[in-house]
Image 1 (tube, one colour):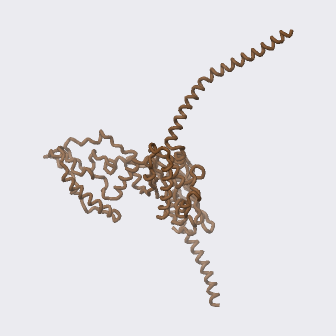
Image 2 (cartoon, one colour; image 1 turned 90 degrees about the horizontal axis):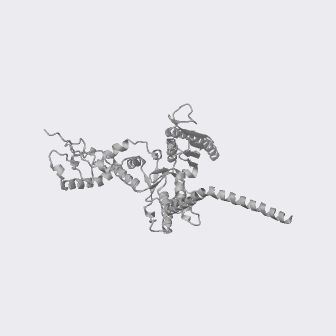
Image 3 (cartoon, chains in turn brown, yellow; image 1 turned 45 degrees about the horizontal axis):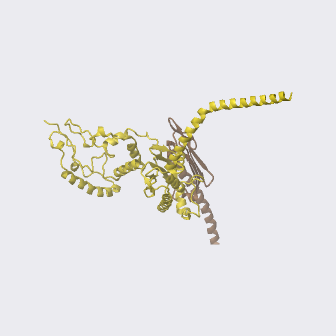
Length: 126
Length: 343
C-alpha cells in the first residue's frame, strides 16, 4: 500500500468488538517509519462503548476519507465512501482506495515534474 | 471370531506426511524425539491389561508422546502446548498490538522494561511476600491463531480426574487410538472436540486478531504492573513516564518510535477480562496485594464502627433532645425564682 501521500490518520475503536477488526489491521499495514511522515492518532475505546469504530485518512491534496463500522445485530453497518452498499467496508476496499488516490496524485506529480524538467531542458539548451 | 481391532501404532503412521518448509526444522528435531519414543515404547513394560489377547491394547504409545489431534512434530502443535501452559501459569497477561516494530526498537523497549521492573524488585519492602519476579516478566509476540484455541482449551476444557481415567472395559477396540478418553492433554482429540464446541464464546476472542504481543506476569503484582505501564503505555498522572533527567535512555529515538507503535488493548487478570481502564485501575492499586489487604482490613474495621454509630444514633438523638429540654426547663425555672425573690 502506497502511503507516501497520506498525511494524517485518526482512528478510534473498541478492541473487544468485532468492529475494530479492520482499523487494527489497517494500522498494521503502515510502513515501519510511518510515524515520521504521517500524523497518527489512535484511541482505544472502553469495552462497554457503543460508538462505532472510525478511521479517518487525510491526504496531501487535502482529500479526506472517513470510514465507520457500527455494531448491529445483523452485522456491521457502514457509512462514508461506499454508501450505496450495505456491506461493511473491508480492508481490501480501503487499501484499494488509498492506492487509487496515490496513483492519481503520483500521476499529477509526474506531469508537473515533467513540465518543470521541460523548462529546465530549455534553459540548458540555451 | 474376535472383533477386528484397528489400532495403529506409532511405527505404522505414514512417514511421508506433508511438512511445510517452515516446520521442517521442527521435524528435524522432533524426528529424533519420535525415534527415541518408539524405541522407548518397545522397552516400556507392557501392562497386564494389554497382555490379555482380547482386551484393548491401549498403551501402545509412549507416555511422553501420546497420540495427538495434530502432528506433534509441527511447530504450531508445540506452540499450542506452550500457550496453554502460559495461560495456566500466568494470572496476569496484558495484550498489546504491535505494528511493525523494528528489532532494535523491540530490544530497546525490552531493555527499558527490564530496568524498570528490576527497580521495583530492588525497592520492595517485604521480600517474603513479594518475590522477585522481574526476570519472569516477558513481553512476547504471540501467534493469535494458535493463542485463541489455547485460550479456549484453558478456559473451557477441564477434564475431571474421575471421568477420564476410565479405559473402556468392553474389549471393543477404539477406531482411533486418539479418541481414547484417557487422553486429556492439550493436543488430544478430546481437547480439540471440546474446545471446538466453544468457538467465539470467550470475550477476549475479538481482541485476538492481528499482530499481538503479550506481557506476562507470574503473579498479580500491581507495583510491577504500574512500572510496566509507565514504560509501555504512559499516562501523565497515574503512570508517568520517566523524565529525561532520570532516564535519558528511555527518550532515545528507538524506544520512542517503538512505543508509538505499541497499543495497549486489554488484559486477562485472574481469568477475568479487563479493558484499558480496568488494567489501569489494577495498576493503580497502592501498595500491591499487601496494601489491598490492609485496605480491606481497615474498611472492615471502619465498617464495624460505622454500624454501631448508626444503631446508637436513634437513642443518642433522644438523649440529646431530652437533655436539651431539661436545660431549657431549668433555665426557665431559674429566672422565675429570681423574679419571685425580687418581688
